[in-house]
Length: 131
Image (tube, rainbow, N blue to C red; front, side, top):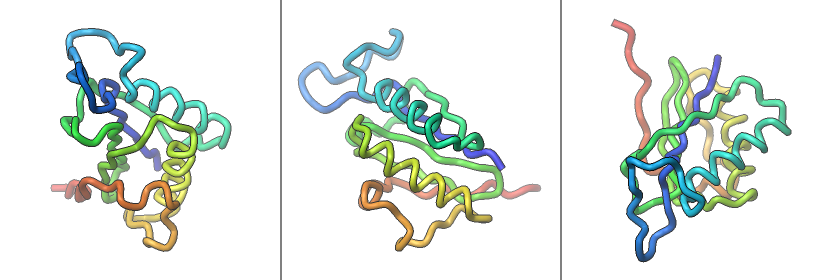
């Protein structure tokens, strides 16, 4: 079952001028775009073919950049924030994604969370019900 990771491409680190111009293409200072590129590279090296990376202009969690939304059909979804655009953070997220992919319901036991994702969860999103 595929796993989608949606990365906020317009996330920026807090500071002067940090508000993103949502009408523009991702700029070099936008850490979300950097995070997405790092994530794609790390995933390619792990062979995690069931994980698809996408981007979105804004996930509306500007106080917690970088932000990602993890989702998969029939599984619980999650929003994580405060992820620095650094390889160690991306590797921790990939470790979590591998554990997430091994579940039927998307619930990963806390003991299996990599240290780099602990304390970074913003929201848990229930799987949509089939009606």
